[in-house]
Structure formats: C-alpha cells, structure tokens
Length: 511
Ligand code: SF4
Image (cartoon, rainbow, N blue to C red; front, side, top):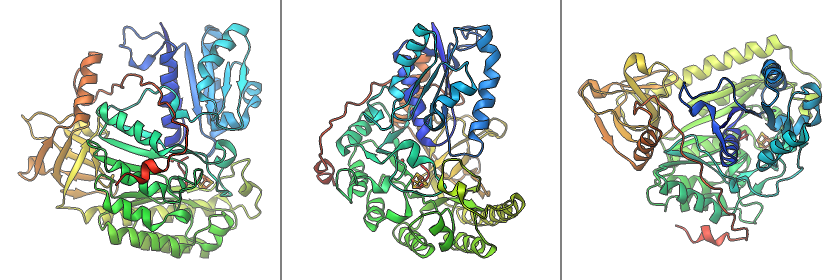
C-alpha cells in the first residue's frame, strides 16, 4: 500500500485542484495517509505533493522552506517522491529542481492530469521530471476527483483570466479564460446532487465573464437560473466575480433564483480611482458602489464581502482615504485585506514609488479597525433574526468547549449555535433554524435552542451522504470526524458549443 499527502497553498481554485490531485493518485492506487487509522498509518507518505500559490507574499520562501524540511526524510527514504505543482511550479519550472534537487516531479497548472505518469517516469528513469504546458488541453473537470465534503462541492466553470491587473500573476500562470460548456457544468452539478450534495460553489477566476469564449455575454446569469431548476440543490454560490463586468442580468438571476444564495464576494482592491487605474482595473468607485446598491435593492439581506490591497505603489494618503470612504459606504460584511507586496513577474513589481512598510502597516491597521466596526454593526443588526444554517463538521475552533456546533447561514455568515441537551445532534449537511442571540465581529452566536427560542432540524440528503460516509469508513459518527467521499470519475466533456442548453433552462478566484 502506497500513501500520499497533498499540501495545498492558496485559493479555492487550488483547493479544488487538490481534490483532483487526490482523485488521480487514488485512481493510481495510492491511499490518503491522513485517512488511515493511527495503527495503520506508516511513518511517512510515499508521495508528497505541494500544490503551490504564486499570489501570496513570500510564496517561494514558504515552498522552499517546506521542501528543505522534507530533505532529511528523502535522504532516509530515497523511494519517497516529492512533486510540486500549481502556480509557483508553472512560474519557476526548472528553478525548483535547481534549488531543491531532491524534488522528483514539477508539473504546471495546465497538466495536473500528468502527475501519476510523471511520478512513474521519475521512478523508472531515476531522474526529476519537469513538465509544464503553456495552455490547457482538456478542462480539468475531466479528471477523477476526491472531494473534501460529502454535502458541498466546488464546480469549475472556467479557468484563466483575460484581465491584466498589474498586481496579479494569474493571467501569466493560468492563461487566457477557458470556459467550460454549460451542459458539462450542469451535468456535473446534477451528478453531485445525485450523490447527496446540497450546496455547490461555481468557481472561476472571473465568473461573470463566463461565456466570453463561446460568445454568450449573458451565459453566467443563465447558468445561475439553470442551477435553480435542479431539484435537490439547496444552495448555489459562486466566486469570484469582477466588478467591471458585473451586469444587472446577473443581479436579476440571483434575486429571482431561490437557491442562489444572497451572498456576494465583490473584490474592490482600492477605493481610489487613480489607484484602480494604475492597477488596470477598469471600474471606478462609483460604479462599484452602484453595483452594491442594485444588489441590495434586489436582495436587501445580501452579505457582501471583498478583497482590498493596501499600499499599492504610489498610493497617497488621499487615495487611501478614498478606500476608507468606500469601505464605510459599502458596508461589507467582511473583507480580506492585504498589504501590497512585490510579486515578481507582475507589472506592478517594476512601478516606482513602492511604499515604506511602516506606512503600509499603519494604513492597513486603520483599515482593519474600520472594517471590524462595520462588520460588527452588520452582525449586531442580525440579533433576533431567525436563520437557516447549513451544519458544518466542526467549523468553530471552540465548539467542543462551548458545546455549540457551527455552520453557514444563507448569506454565508459563520454561525455557532447551541444544541439542546438530550436531543439528537444534527449531522453536517443538515439544515437547522435558530435565532441569532449575539452578533460578534466575525461570527454570529445562536443560543436560542437552549433559551426556549427557535430550534428545528431538517435532515437533508447532504446529512445522509455525510452519515453514509461515517458508516462506510467505520468512523465514529461524532460531528468532528471529517471523512471524504470516494473518488468520482472525471466528467466527460461534451465538447461542442451548446449555449442553448442554458438558454432553454428557466472561479485565484481573486478577481
Ligand atoms: S486579479 Fe483577478 S481579474 Fe485581475 S488579473 Fe488576477 S485573476 Fe484576473
């Protein structure tokens, strides 16, 4: 029995790619080392795969540090294989085996499917294999997948990005946008629902330009509406859209499709029009705020999250104040905030006026303080509201201490809810109704079940799928146990234009 371990860095795109890497390795006969019981688990894995990210600060330093830590294990056991894939592999290529010659395989973002063959070839030839393709040959959804969750799944609708944001390395590493056919996407969603999945997240670097490749500007809204027709699919989410191309037909589709959730991740990046221009982001703050207004007009309860970069080269105090203004007006439920750092290979890396760290840090701290206030006001406003929560396997770190369980509301807010003693605990994948008793800055608390307020549990096929997994794997059925579904075969690509399939119906994800 050969075992594997996949270490994932970066965005949801990588998380989903890692599900494919796991599926490929299991199809090739490897076993997930983490899934084995303590007594059956060997000291070290036979294959370690790093699925890397080139977007985050110091990604290379982190990778080479981890590779260095593995070196003694490789020296002790030369049969152990180390593979490096993902965006940093696509970028650094040969450099990886030059700096870490104990690495066996380097593969890129366009040839994830080659991994088992490259491992075999590296073993047979006793030399490192580096294979990077310049563009995608087949959509990666055709690969086998071992999904992380029994009740919730990622579905890729596109890969790559046609934009040229100056701080972003994605276009050069993931290539131009490739859209999957709507019929292929919907077939995968239906197949997941048949397996018990109740929630899907449509994934692409820039989901709302979906359709650009097959000439249908309205394809994303149509896809959302078509998802609304799928019986048993309770929650549809997507990430990430881009403000420049976010049109009202998508807002209408969200508002008019009952299983599309009232949550939206809309990356602002900067509130200053001057900085947006330097970032080569083609919308301006007024357009951005206009989108939010129209979303809230149609979906008053929508929770809107964002990404913001502080300290882009040349950002003045006045520019930063503009970001603060937009954050105040936008009322984001939360924000992923980043301090700008030079990412080699991006146009912004060569811009003059890179800001001193102390200035960036001070602005960053002010932004976080403001966003915390805004998030907290938004969460406190929900006190007393009844929410439907999709139960997760132990999402709260303190759940064991507080005897609460956790899950996500329809608007994707994290909710920790109490479970009355003596009642059957809901299963991950089930849906509970609870009242919010406290809005904290980063989550909601719902103690109504133990305070005589709302408490109901709806068992779903998602909960059944989660439970079946516990039984199949012989695990105890405690809600803390995380077992992964069996490998599913890749989805065959229909491979011919068929936008009508959607018309006939009713996501770095870092845009
Ligand atoms: S930030 Fe997003 S939209 Fe801009 S280039 Fe990168 S992936 Fe594309």
